[in-house]
Image (cartoon, rainbow, N blue to C red; front, top):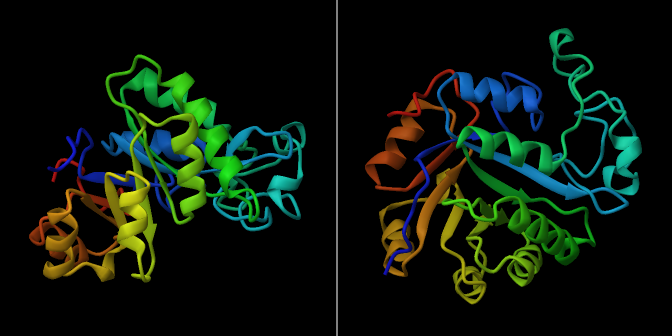
Length: 246
């Protein structure tokens, strides 16, 4: 039996894809202006255990900082410019904490896919802390966030502290035993590189009661192929191209 699925099909990648500095509140606000009601973000831990939004392990690509983000305390990370790399219009945009984004989404009735993106070596701990924080912030909310991760240890950590929040396994390739791992973790969905899906794989995953999501879909033909296959969710950078009502 397939788990009930409250989430919309269209999910804005890192807030607004490439139209604004990824994983900043400016990006999520821009995605919302384009009509999106569900967002994907990346969460990792500061050195003092604060979950904050960033994709890369290192700071150079998306901030004016240097080194590994997880090596710095939140007090230092909070001082960084996370927008100037993107454009002058976004210069000075700060890194948000996961709590910042959670409060924004809850206040506006938006859905959130939290990709647990741990600094290497902190997989289980990151899952535990993100789970604990999310359980507190979404307490009493009708719809919980969706956790996802490429790292089974991170999902196991999240299950330990927030067993009621649904989990999804991210896959860039179909490795041996991946679906057994997803089942053992109690996952409700598989999130694949969109090119991996075909009719047989969709039937296999749906036949086991799991939902089918794809990243990162930025072309019309790819999106239409996934819709025709009957998949459940599409994560996109192109919030300017795809109507989330479609």
